[in-house]
Length: 345
Image (cartoon, rainbow, N blue to C red; front, side):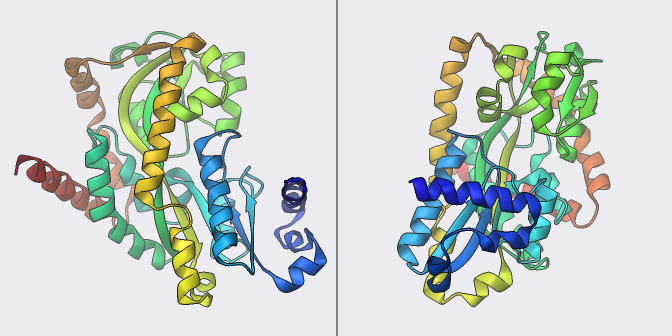
């Protein structure tokens, strides 16, 4: 364990200077006889995401004994845009990140977060696995990347200082958005004052009054200290937040067939990831009232008001994203329709 912690500390220091300096970390004799690969991402300490990365590292090293997989999962590579750029250049071999970050590589992925498109976990799984995975595997392949699997985060909701149970109460409220176009579009459509900033700046922005709230997942809200500064949490479930696990194509192709299979299954697979994340999210949600959070679940009628207010953003996003955004959206609609038909049969 001490060697592992020392190694990760060394990696973090080296990445801050230059990505090539990573090779200098670790025991020289180990480097000579083991292949080194780097897996990068961002995860909060004690989060389910962190646990999944550690399990991934363990599976790879157990099943490919001569591979030394080195995790850099505290954002040491810089912003996600830099992470995915490094992945394409094979400076890191495996990368995980959000739709917002990877949109710099494949902009069309922004369409997967359009507000109020999905209505249930089952619908999300059906559309993402059967329709979106092959669509985006092809788009990422054009960029020299292999889509290994979707990663899971959960439903995105609204947090705020003031009580916001309906869109009318959000008008003029300063709400933080990520760089994701869909997040910005949602806040704009409900009349909020959109303020875009990195998540690391959210807590101090709340403390200084620069913002009054924002949108995020239950995990990020619960584990990042936001509960004390913005105690009103509305379960809007307006989009389903996911991410990607990608590998550099040339690196993955250089492995044997058996090794490629290990890498592709090493994170656990999409369904196992979902199950683990959803169980974790359920526990965090149940504990929010103990932290002084005021939870509010909109009624069916109120959800329709939210949905109607946000729906015009869909067409605007198609226009703003460009590329094959309309084709992606049309495929999403077809998947949603096929899901509904499968429930009726």
